[in-house]
Length: 138
Image 1 (tube, one colour):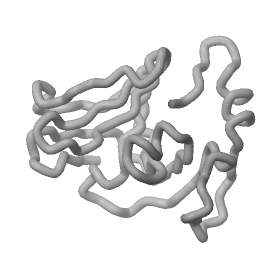
Image 2 (cartoon, rainbow, N blue to C red):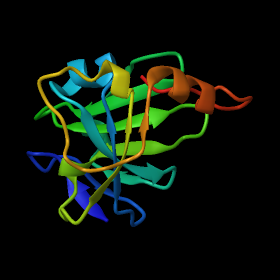
Image 3 (cartoon, helix red, strand yellow):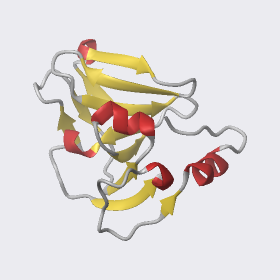
């Protein structure tokens, strides 16, 4: 899959994936003004224009990045695995399916999705990803 930021200074190529996950945690909502709707792209994402990428260490276990020219959010990356979660809007294709929602107990009441998806609370996410070698999101 191919994508790029708003101004085109950064582009990326990712393995094909059609599933979007929605994260309702406070970090994601503060970062983008709403839930993060991201495609789990794994570790094999290639970036062009990397000199225009600014990386922010948002926690001990993850980084978030954006285009330094236009501010487009480019990814959330888990440090332990190198996996990228790329906002769906970055991609040229919009052929995605909402497949899951996490931190559902942190979702504010002013929006909701009609899609029926698996939903995990904050505690369930922590339990699922706190096994040895795994990390939580934020």
